[in-house]
Amino acid sequence: MMNFEDKFMEIQVDMISLAMEYVQNQAEKIFIYCVADDFYRFDVFFKTNNHYLDRDEISDYLPNRIDSSDEIQFSLLRIGAQDIERMVKLCQEYDREHPTEMWLIYDAQKNSLDSRYSYEGRYDKDEELLPRLEFEKWFEEVKGEQL
Image (cartoon, rainbow, N blue to C red; front, top):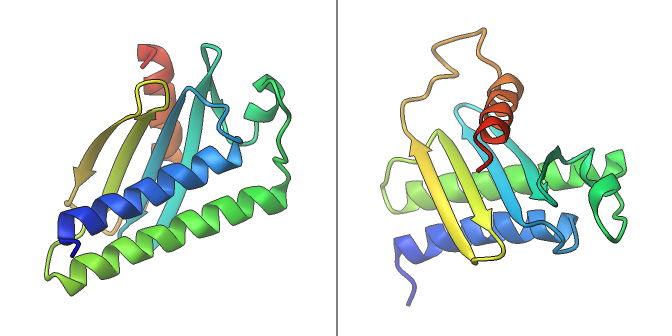
């Protein structure tokens, strides 16, 4: 029988699988940002061929083109947000505090996952703080550090 930690990890693996499916397993690294702070927000960017690329840019840099249409991107974001909702419900079911933010870095070449969680709920405290801006800030940090 699976315990809380196994189920929690399974949801994160589902998020990674979703992102890998989007790029048809052609990314070296996947960077996922999640928010669960009175709303759910999922976004992702990728590293391939030493380029750090947002989901709408990556198709031009992959050996095999992918469908990066708005419809597919919206599906990616919607399903990712549903995974976050599953994570929140799992935490509630086990009477655990859920992370309000998650940063996941999956290295496909090493098959390793690094994760960082925050439980502080920044978005409900600061109306000017926007998930898209935080995502873009992280994207620029990763790009600058060449993670």
